[in-house]
Image 1 (cartoon, helix red, strand yellow):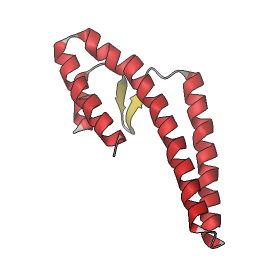
Image 2 (cartoon, helix red, strand yellow):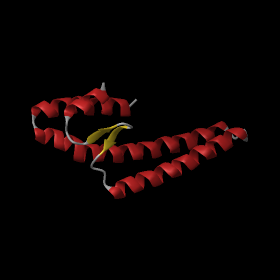
Image 3 (cartoon, helix red, strand yellow):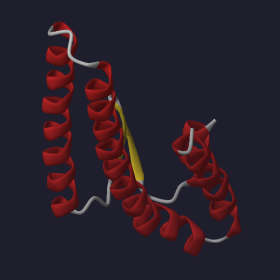
Image 4 (spheres, one colour):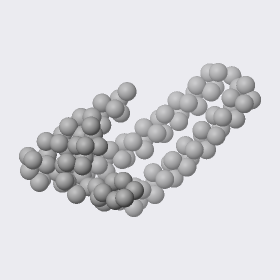
Length: 115
């Protein structure tokens, strides 16, 4: 449903291409920070795999899993901030016919992020 909402909102935040929707207004500094964080997270996940292979103490593994979750939440917060700053703002300024689908999309995103 969220994909349909984003496609219908016509806020200018996404461009439909043959490979799918693409972000339009992404701050390159934010993008670079997120990529760096995701690479670090990738390393943490590889570390988790190694911990499991080595039969490490469960509490230590669970602590590292919590760390990965928090790092992913940090990336999610940055992405949500960018979405609100560019996409949602644009849709809301465009008027009710664009704002209403954006409100639905934002609600869906918030509920998904708290699961």
